[in-house]
Amino acid sequence: MIELVYLGLGSNIGDRETNIFSSIAALEVRDEIHVSRTASIYETDPLYNTDQPSFLNTVVELKTELDPEVMLQVCKGIELMLGRPEENEKNEPRVIDMDILAYETKMIELEHLIIPHPEIIARKFVLVPWAELAPDFTVQGFGRTVSELLALCPDTSEVRLHHLEKSA
Image 1: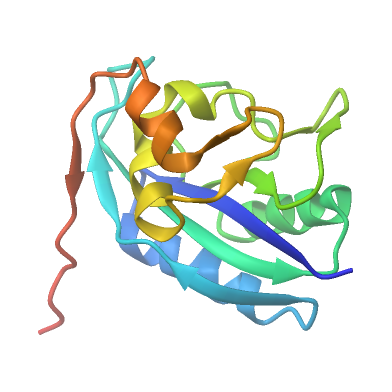
Image 2 (image 1 turned 60 degrees about the horizontal axis):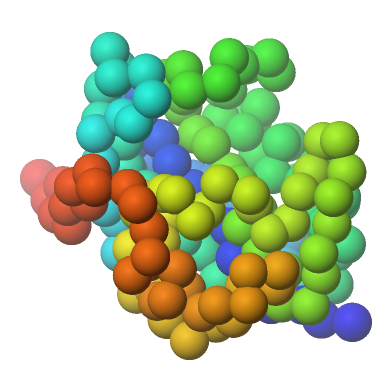
């Protein structure tokens, strides 16, 4: 069955734009994944460990037949390929972070994977780009649309539209 899936992408080390675009390109080379749309890129200050560079974040909409655990392995493989260490402390700087936010029809609760992502309701840096792409998408388990979750989000941080670097 082909599923509609949303991924959150973030980067705050190195060439952040290239890191995000490279992760999207790596998704697109997979025959089982069709990237439908990508939100604008937003810049945000780090939330939890504030002694690090600001993040660029976006959300990607894709369609896939891959089950969530295989999709997680694809994302982890792309992160490793782009230089993220296999073990990374929570809330530390990262070359790329790829989180599965939601599958259209699936809810999963495993030790290493929870879908929908349990922290989305408190993260404007995820909800703002996601609302740009799919404001009316109802998130399984929350019973609310992305735009409703954004309106209820307690996160008061600033999420700024990032203007892409111009090539010389």
